[in-house]
Length: 433
Image (cartoon, rainbow, N blue to C red):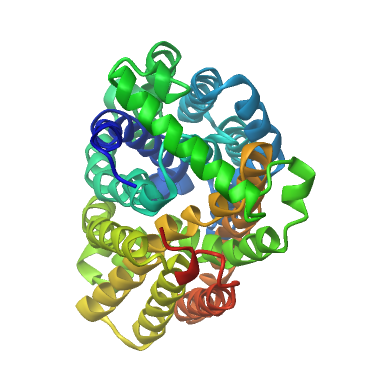
């Protein structure tokens, strides 16, 4: 039930906490996918084929997956302030080292280390927000946080084009400046997190004590009600035995495959769709911002709609179906029409993330949530490991772009079917707040 203190607390979270977390994920995502913007110069200087570039893009997720669950369990124990700060510092240092690599082997090793360093960041923030926001507000809040992904793409193209234009300055290639400069914010923000990120509402200096108390009371009552009704488990082993957890992991695998298939190859798709962009990587990076701009709008609308109707799984299924159909149509299209269809598919895929990540905390709490959310993300990131590698090999074949788009359409259609088959309690209408 809404009360003035609770409303003030939620408004303060949207003003104070959410923008800061958004900036952290924006920096994280730029450091993760900036190789897509550096690909042309990087591949030439290090002698990379499409397949070896795809392998380097994907190997990030091997380190990420292996350390995801331990990282999130540590965060649940020591608190977000200390552990998120550690993650930021370590990945910033590794990302900066990528500016100085001289061989494909070093590229592979640093991408692997970047995944190890960043492991636990995203599921840690999802867990953290579940400790601050009631379930009825969670999908739109997570969508606001996850807007960092399309905004990273929206800003990443123009920013990367500007940094690539520094080519030759100080004797460094443009892609080296790109890696170095985009790593610095993560290092700086680590110290900001250590100093200013509150672990719980009552520790936030920007929340009035009465408002913080009202928020924590609602969150505690919500947890107690779910636990008493048997709808939520808290022990780690009990959480890992939940069939819904395994279904969500199985669903997130094709979502992750499609999601990262877009993220690492959009500049290439844009360049192929618009012949004028093929001669200019900078122009391709600028135009590749268009799909992400549409994704920003779609994520906000779908997150709000899912919370309002309480049908999170159906919103996920519908968004993925739109993405699959759009990609299927894009195979036979060309020019501006292909760009438009790829943009719609990108926006639809990204928009499902807010409603999807609102589902696990409906039946997981405590260490079950820490381990379960990390496990789901780990399985999904196997798709992040496989997608760039498989797409890199497909792109080498005759008609490779059509094959790659067909593959993405197929996995997104599978994801839509799996979302539709989730139990009604998984963000269905019966769980509406």
